[in-house]
Amino acid sequence: MWKQANFVERNGFMGVRFVAVETDEDQEKLAKLADEIWHEYWPAIIGDAQTDYMVEKFQSLEAIKRDMAEHAYEYWFVVDEAGKTVGYTGGCEESETSRYFISKIYLLAEERGKHYASQIIGFYTDLCRSRDLHSMYLTVNKQNDLGIRAYYGKGFVTIESVKNDIGNGFAMDDYVMEKEA
Image (cartoon, rainbow, N blue to C red; front, side, top):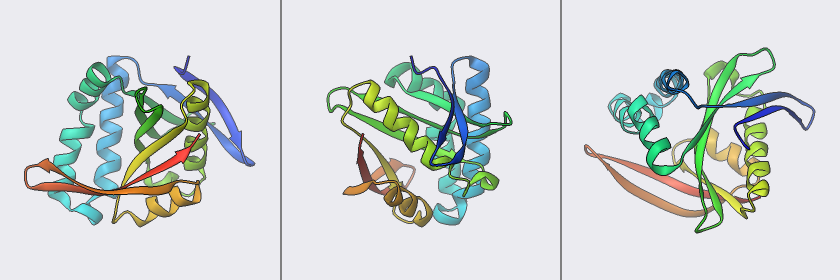
């Protein structure tokens, strides 16, 4: 049902569409896109070494395949009306909590500030409602001021502060933010 969503116009902004990641080729394209976005954005916040480690652990082709096969993750390319892939998003349904975990919302540098994040959150709101999930949640790095401001602006509230050891001497120091669907 949520394999592909058509263009959606929200609040007067140009629409994007969400194209499901399904094939091996899609997964390879996603891993390359993730590598590009992560290495552009995260080194200034978490450093080069942790960025490299996290890309390998959470954004690599192997990680994407594992998450889809073992954890029922769903991924979508975010595509603008001209057909350009401007980012990606993904996560998984948690039926036991009646929530959707948004694991990833990432846009190319030149595509930020174009209100695509609003449309991505709208996409997840529609997805949650269609699946009778009461809310969505995500984690955001405490140093990611851009992300934190964006999520507050989209109606998310901070429900928890967590610090998780991810191995190799690194930790993820995040806020957990939630929004009702």
